[in-house]
Amino acid sequence: MNAFRSTRRYRIPMAGTIIAAAALLMAACSSPAGRVPLEAPPAVTIPAQESPPQRQPATPPVPTAAPETVKPGAEAKATQVHAAFAKRNLMKHLQALQKIADEAGGNRASGTRGYEASARYVEEQLRAAGYKPVRQVFTYWDEDREADTETFNILADTAGSAEHTIVVGGHLDSVRRGPGINDNGSGVAAMIETARWMAETGVQPKNRVRFAFWGAEEVDLLGSQYYVDSLSNKENTETMLNLNLDMVASPNGGRFVHDGDGSSFGDAAPAGSDVIERTFLDYFAENGLATAPAEFEEGDSDYDAFMKAGIPTGGLFTGDEDEKTAQQVEEFGGTENGEHDPCYHRACDDTSNIDRQLLHDMAGALGYVTVAFAMLPRADSE
Image (cartoon, rainbow, N blue to C red; front, side, top):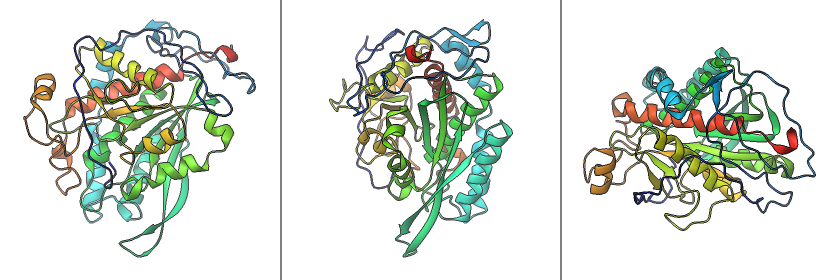
């Protein structure tokens, strides 16, 4: 979570605001080329391998309903995905990042050996699952060192149409004051396991998924901003959506879903962001898990660059230094008036600072929603 961001606000939704899974057709966004409209599928599908879809760029695509199976020939519901992620060893990634920080002076900040070692670990995990990660290098001014510093993002793609790219992003770096295991090792672990799960289940995405591990988020959201700035107009239009993971295992946290439709905070997000929010809400509702909306705050996290570029954006969060309200305690448990993460940006943000149940809940939601959009058929590609 960016150290320079403003304070986040939360609200608990009123009863009945969780929306049941349904197909939702959105109007095209205001991108000059006409952005791909989004439709939220009622379930995820991982069908047998088929040819990547193609489309005519001049015709804005119209999505159709998605099938409802998670493995070839087998039905799968949100509850099954949740159960699958409950068995995945997300903590091993956090333990690895902790060891890296311990051996690198206590942090994994961009431009340090701790960041380089963290990057190598992520790359090893992705390669072992069959991905081909690449580094997107950029340079920024390091005020502490008073010098230009080179760092990088890590990008790893699935198969699928590059004309409908889903960017699943979370920052890899920590602050210099601590190892950053919740902020944002938790998001990194969820992303790695989503990538591994997709590879293991043999999913053949219709739409390309790009897993993006951002550098220099804690400096000032620099990695994600560099990525978005590097997109051509065509690549911007072909970016179907962004999913952001930043702190998803806070020890006194809650399941916060970013307010894509503006119903809680009144802030306008790019068209299609509401569909992302509702797809996350559907997943949690089917698993009987309470949620609350989180506000999109300018300069708060890596979603910022995507939102300013008009790209549909959504994501998950479990809280930082804000205090937990009585209503949130009623919904999620925990300690009233205690910080969601009392170790936010501190040296104690280590492996003892993790709510493992929240981590599995949020990782499962990421996996489900990622595959749901990755398998969403496009009318122009059929």
